[in-house]
Image (cartoon, rainbow, N blue to C red; front, side, top):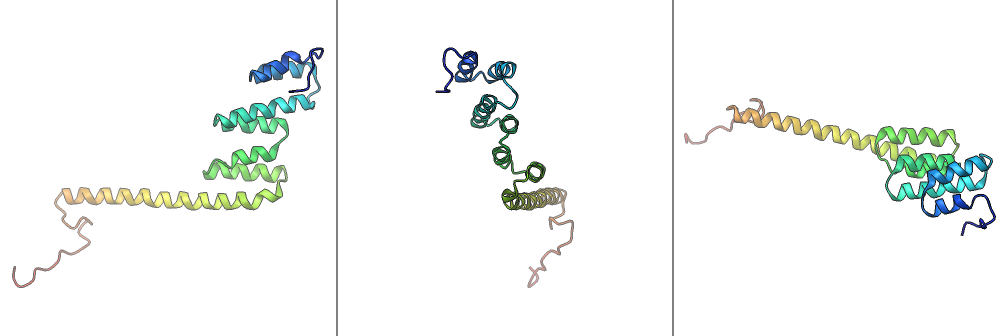
Length: 157
């Protein structure tokens, strides 16, 4: 499967990868190979895939970056929808010159900013409603700190 035969000194590393013991496989590969060897890249990619499947996105991002696959790292980073994470994603994409991804990242960032603004309005609205309910409980029947007049009674009733 990995193309490493029984005579190869990396055989234990291949077995470790098959068992998903990536940290140990990397240790062996780094001792025996040059840092830019394709075997090391492949171990990182497989480890990243496992981390991604297990929803361990930070670890997956690190592994994709270590493997040299910045594009895939950015794709995982885009799963986070908060403003801070998307700002970081945008910076990474600019640094590694993933120009074709920039419009989509900018659009996601703008959407996140709008969403956070709307959430802030909802939260402040809930606080206002909560305060209005306390006013009613304390005898203010308008529910709005007396800012709305009570309806006038008609025909003397």
